[in-house]
Image (tube, rainbow, N blue to C red; front, top):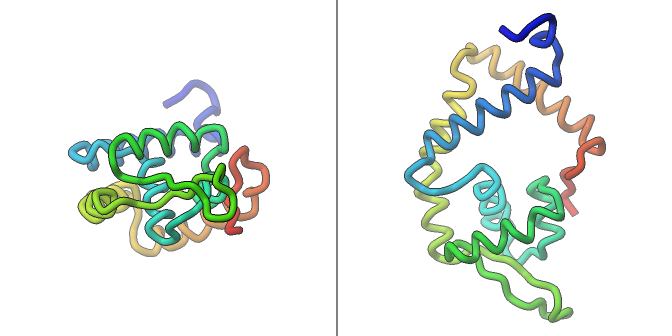
Length: 152
């Protein structure tokens, strides 16, 4: 246990939960060479192809300064493609490639195992309560984030 009452502070526990969640994700997905942010970007692009980088950053709740390098790395892997926009050729529109779609489909069972492991200590009723409360915390504090989630 951490010294003093540090382990009672929500910020500390949320940071530790994030560390644990990422560690479990990387463990379960080690055969796919994918990170949680890669996965988030690919899921957003699967749902909505041909997004510009700023919209993609908003929908994946990733900082705008991070999305460019992340998109570049995914393009180098052959998982996404960046094409010039139709109205503004300077704007880049991103989509999954066939390889990206294949990787995303292949990794889904590992991602599902990740979710089960993260929530494993909780009963089904506790999971439902925890997820509802976590969603409320995230939704009601969204604008306080450096990378708020935005649909539009």
